[in-house]
Image (cartoon, rainbow, N blue to C red):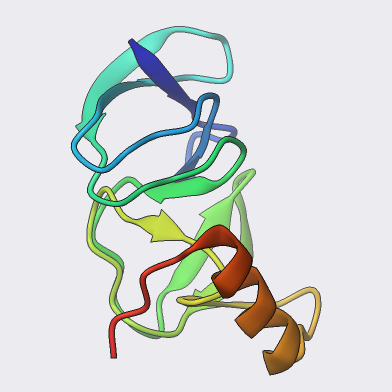
Length: 112
């Protein structure tokens, strides 16, 4: 079965250890490599990218590595991709033109 890894106990996103397709079921592992639970993937998520482990509301903090790393810019449903199209980084100001290119190259479906 495909897998995600949770890097911190407080994290609300997990990192894909395999490329995932919409509809896949995957196991979420702790950072100690213990199986925690399974999750349904509701959007294609390439290897190394993040999945929402719960519904995240616009304005809420994105927590990864037990730290706030970004702010949700639109509601993200559990099982969806968490990336530049729905998160504003608190560490780096990514120009919109770069975000557009990332979205295009990753073939991210952007809801209007």
